Length: 89
Image (spheres, helix red, strand yellow):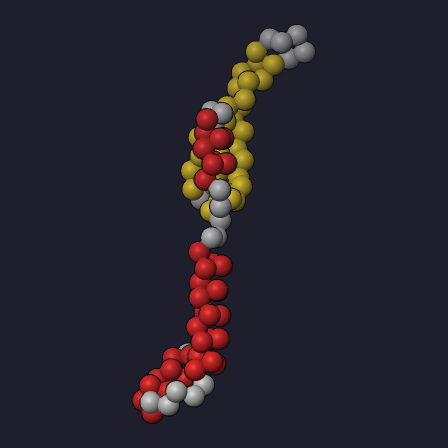
């Protein structure tokens, strides 16, 4: 809000002073915007796990559900390539 007011005040009065302050505020806003643009996304991936006994006989399957957050889409692709079904939370 103060950036907008400062910029409007300088533009209205056509005074080139305080340009350094305006530039610093602009750079700060730009850095904040860039830092928030790389936020991670949370996923829930489920896989079927085969249950066996000590002798290796099949007892059935169970669903394994895992939740995780990442900004790397490759990690989700790797899990899906391994048989998981992933969805965005």
